[in-house]
Amino acid sequence: MSKGSTTGGGGVPLPKGPGSKTISAPTSPLKEKKAGFFGKVTSFSQVVSAKVEQARDAAGNIRVPGMAREKSYTLLVIDDANTDWSKYFRGRRIRGEYDIRVEQGEFKEISVSAETNSGVNASFAGAKGVRTFKPDFLLVRQNIRDANEDFRNIIIALQYGGIPSINSLESIYNFQDRPWIFSNMIQIQRQLGKENFPLINQVFYPNHTDMNSTDQYPCVLKVGHAHNGVGKVRIDNASGFQEMAGLVSVANSYCSVECFIDAKYDLHVQKIGNSYKAFM
Image (tube, rainbow, N blue to C red; front, side, top):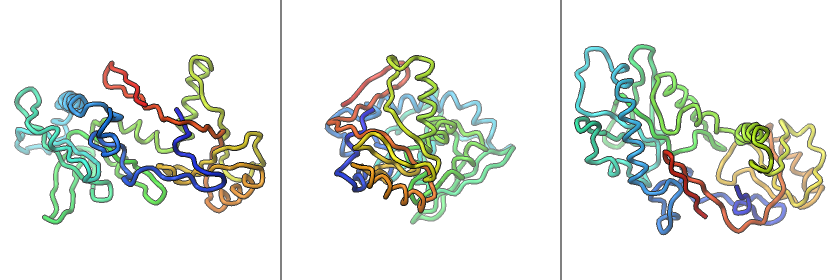
């Protein structure tokens, strides 16, 4: 995947992505006039509806014993207010009988507890007071970890309660650190071969200790786990590389280094079910 669109001038931090910290939503203004990363919202909501239906039996098992079964199942959407997810599921039913109730809020707004027998209890605190509910399914549209935020505890609680999710909570947790993702891609490359699964050559440093130099300039250095271009710098020479090694030591974090590619486009690959699409 192209790196060029997130890189900037020599020796300065690369620009961040668009204002919102969330993953691009189907109604994102930047993607309004062209096919979005997740394609048509109707297709995506149908996938979620199908997954909610598959989780129906499991959700029934985690309801509080003795509680009357309502004619609805609760979909918890973790996203900001830029997208109103309830309108995409309004009027939709599971097996023609159960409505889909949408509870939406950000990671910073939600309180969660998980119990072995009764599952997850969640609540949102808003202007109209606190609303409490038991989610049956989960849709996560925010990064769980960024430069100054870490919501892994929420994900662990939801996993503890066995809440089904799109994407799976395992994949969401594993995608926190890009070097971890890249290491798994390396394993795929070793299985399929470099011609069938090409990757950008990358160097990973667990800390600043072994950061001597690189033989490719200009290069891009990425510090830590933050998203949207935070902690990413273009380096043009060995002197700049050594300066960045000093900053990595202060950050007390890992970093990765790869060659700078002056690309013109990003390529987004969408997969819904057995359907694949690519967008430029």
